[in-house]
Length: 103
Image (tube, rainbow, N blue to C red; front, side, top):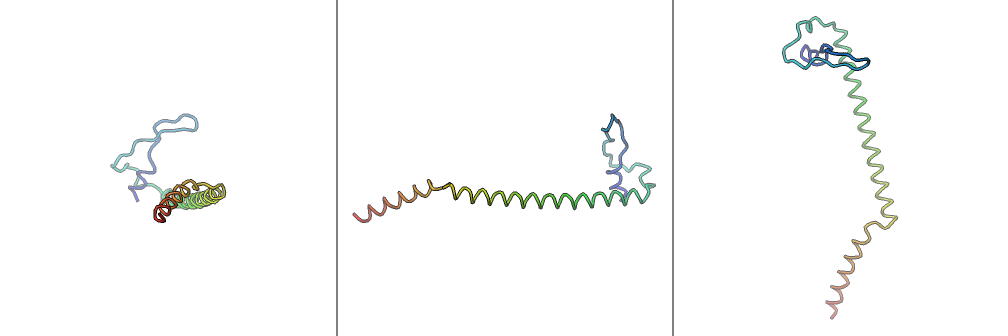
């Protein structure tokens, strides 16, 4: 857990209004990380858990919307005759072969 907290809780190096920069990640544990209160650890776990649930839900909703849109586009294109030119070329070729075989 100390390694995870070492990644999540890094000192702020610069701050400007609402924005800030944090210290680059260092593989060596910060000396105070082992004294971190359990409440901070549990807060980080709870935050990441909820973030994962929210992102999973958003991705699922996005996929469902995308699939619905793809289906609607497909159905609309059929109504408008999209793709009929490919069939016409195929039908003309079949017709030519039939004429040849009849002669």
